[in-house]
Image 1 (cartoon, helix red, strand yellow):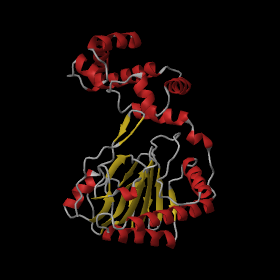
Image 2 (cartoon, one colour):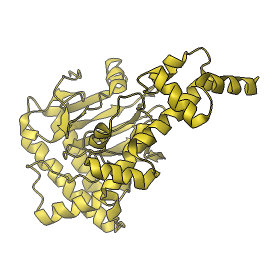
Image 3 (spheres, one colour):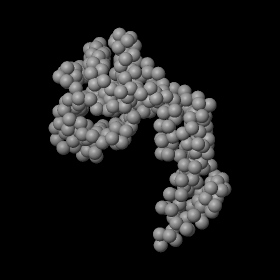
Image 4 (cartoon, rainbow, N blue to C red):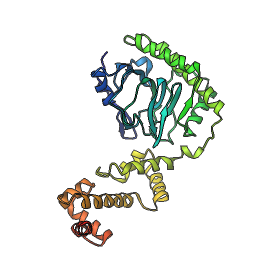
Amino acid sequence: MKINAQKITPFEADGIVYQADTCLPLVDAVKRRKLKFRALARYTYPGERLTEDTLGLNSIGYWDANEPQDWGLDWHRNEGIEIHFLESGTMPYAQQNKEMELLPNYLTITRPWEAHKVGNPTIGMGKFYWVILDLQVRRPHQNWIWPDWVMLAPNDLEKLTIILRQNEKVLWKTDKRVRDCFQRIGKAVDSDIDGNNSSKIRLLINYLLLLMLELIEKDDVELNEHLTDSSRSVRLFLSELENNLSEAWTIEKMAKSAGVGLTRFTHHCKQLTNLTPMRYLMMKRIELSKEILAENEFLTVSEVAFACGFSTSQYFSTVFKKQEKCTPLEYRYKKIKVVL
């Protein structure tokens, strides 16, 4: 089957463009015939193309690995809620820095903002299914919008949404009905040609959601409304900011990336850090520059400045001296001298 991903316009909201995960290690493993792979997908997810009859479904499929694997999917996020199910074998899995091993008949639920990885570092052997539904959200406080073909009664759908939004449980032990549902999903994906199984796939996903609601209700999970507060979205953004300090951030861009308004973003940032957004950004950039100065003695001050997101070396040196009471080169010299 074709597994090349097509270039389709990704999700965009509030001026932010969200790219789909390309699953390149999986694509490479399939090309090397390391495992069987079948999927229907849109955007940059690998697989045969989904049709407009299933809009809101981003990817659905499985892989079947019956020999030792040499690859895994490192930390990433998805453009929707992802439901994983392991039919057989074992699978190293991690979500939100929690390491675990998936066993047969276990299901995981991953919200769009939750980082996760499959493999540690390799995936192991097993048959692994997934369904990714785009609910038009990327942050915890945003309201979920299910595809219009989801047919659960309004009260049931609202109940499922509230439970999934207001708890952080990752792993669920399932029953034979869930296993049978995923097996039927696999067969529908296998035999689909240009969307001729769209109705069947929609019905199976509806049935899966109903089974999930029953499963979760039996578990009597504890709900926490604060998990859907906009302050949590800002907190997540601030934790991600450390990996993107070189970007040309403005307060407006930061607020948009957090998915909240400018005033509320500034308020939450001050509450969480006791600093204004730009002051917090500056502090993090200086912290990064200190690491780079100490560990890369051959980089120039200009190179360090640009790597940390400063527009000019002069401005970097001014800010650095104001905070550290010495120039960047003086700081480097002191650090190198201590090491020697």
